[in-house]
Amino acid sequence: MALADAQGSYGRAAWFRARTGALRPSLGSVPPPALILLGIVSVQIGAGMAKNMFARSSPDAIVMMRLLTSAVVLGAVYRSTLRDLRRLHSWRDIGVATLFGLTLAAMNACFYQALARLPLGIAVTVEFLGPLSVAILASRRRLDLVWALLALGGVAMLARGNGDVTFAGVAFALLAAAGWACYILLSGATGQRFSGSSGLAVASIVGAVVMLPVGIGTAGTKLLDPELLLVAVGVGLLSSVIPYSLELEALRRMSARVFGILMSIEPAVGALVGLVFLGEVLGWQEWLAIGLVITACVGATRFQQSPPEAPEA
Image (cartoon, rainbow, N blue to C red; front, side, top):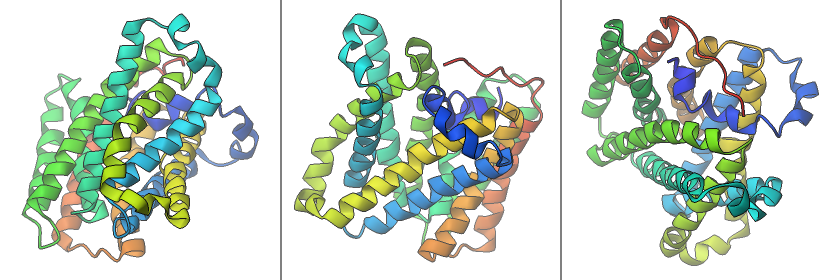
């Protein structure tokens, strides 16, 4: 299993297979690697914007608003499917999508809590253990033990870290990694039961509903700030809609293996965004640790026997 497959049916992009046709003419002339890089930068800038908002609101409130943005956008696109949800799908299907939504909420909540306690690059690197673990555990090759040891060594170096790295932050990032691994498995199960992104629409609504009381309880009247709401919508677009669309177009013109290798640079991009936008300076040991995790991700993807076929929406 390539790392691209481990990132949830070829990453975030697979969910928008049925709804991004209008983007193809404008994106078709852009080289696929550039689309992947733009998508990664978009996600990490969204994370950086979210972290900047923590001084004005709680991480849980930002998660709530991000999921709410996704729920509103996808709910509008799939409103006819949602109206006929019970007629089109069994309770078992709805249960899988609901569990997916709970996982989505937990994963994002843990990651944003980690982000509040760790530099962006470190939080992203530790969270990346989620898809890497799924890719390695799905393989029976001895070589993958090398990649697992490299990744664990990198995370151990980060955990030792300096004053910017806290035990609580690493713990939340590890929980986010576990959530990402569950997300991968549930995204595939949901995609098999729902067409297009309708399953993600259900999951986003569930996640937003779950986070609503938590977000309101921790942020209170701060949620009425128009500027805060506008930035939160921007975080939702940068972290979800834009990268979904860019990655989908790239996947139409490149193999899953190459996609997985390119996605492996995400921890490094997170560290660079943290440096440029948040002033988070990392030491050479932390850059070395990030490099070890990236090497493990590239190795787990590059040396697969055969790339998986892209699933149909």
